[in-house]
Amino acid sequence: MTSLAKAECLLPQESSQTEDLTVTIQTPTGAFEFPCQEGETFLHAGLRAGVSLPYECATGTCGTCRGRLMTGEVDIGWEASPALAKLKREKGDILLCQTKAKSDCLVRVPAKTVTQTSAEAVPAKTRGVICNSRKLTRDVVEFQLKLSAPMTFEAGQFALLTSPSVVGARAYSMVNHSIDKTDSIVFVVKRKHGGGFCDWLFSDTVDGTEVDVFGPLGRATFDTSEKKNLIIVAGGSGIAGMMAILERATRSNYFSKYAGHVFFGVPTLKDGFYLDELAKFVAKAQGGLNVTLALSNEQPSQASHPNYEGIKLANGFVHTAMGASMAGRYDNAMAYLAGPPPMIDAALRVLITDGQLSPQAIRYDKFG
Image (cartoon, rainbow, N blue to C red; front, side, top):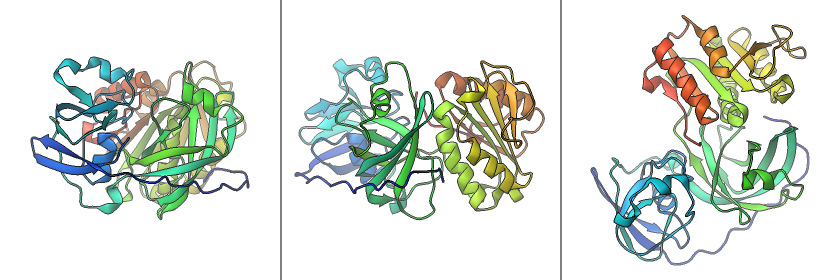
């Protein structure tokens, strides 16, 4: 979907596997047993086996994948993970996304758990080679991954990337979308102060580097069969998964029957990116899609973008622009949110208080 250079990506090599250990999860809905490879987290092993373990960020930030180790020996991948500090570790509390088995283990998980039946919904571990990295703005970089094995994913899902040079996994939404399996995935990342993975991506040496990939993950997905008007609110690199949703909707001619409203927040006009693609989505929708670029640190001099007539401009935070534009127009709507946690919280307040949307009509993944 995005414009990529013609440079070729070499396929990554898969590593050899060692003998598996056994992890047993006890939940209110029953017990589930699955194999766990050496160095693999409980969460990855369970999801890979088709067990729908609880998670949100899957990176040690949110704490949703909390459990309690009853028997067995483990290693903790990221001791400094924010959610780990909130647990009762003296009682055996763990994060499934950070815990790796050293022996057979028994874990109690308070959340309801079921075994999935759809093979397409089961994430898997693979490897990817970074190529065609390019800076979209001063602090936003896009890159492509050439996967060792094709992946199928829903519009709005994300994957975990792990580099040997940085501790811990990072969650990034796919920018592109394909109905069929694809071995090429596009990601976009905004640079954050003190972010080791971000700093590494902004170096000039990432192309050709192999990374571990686990996915697809996430439940904030779009399905054309839901027949809802779309409200899309994104801040910064949060636009990534929204681009996949828009690509999926545009390909299926979704906006010929249902309205789409996109609100994309950036600090200034020069911080906007993917505007070519967004303008094309607007043109193809023939009146069914509206896109507003909200500038938090700049007052626009005109109502629409000087280079893209189909993209409106607004001053202020993105949730404010959304609230002003959507007043009285929330009927039959499904909202998708992505961006920094404060932006998510602010947008939720507007959607629930002003729009009267139910929690079931709002979708987002907790990356922050």
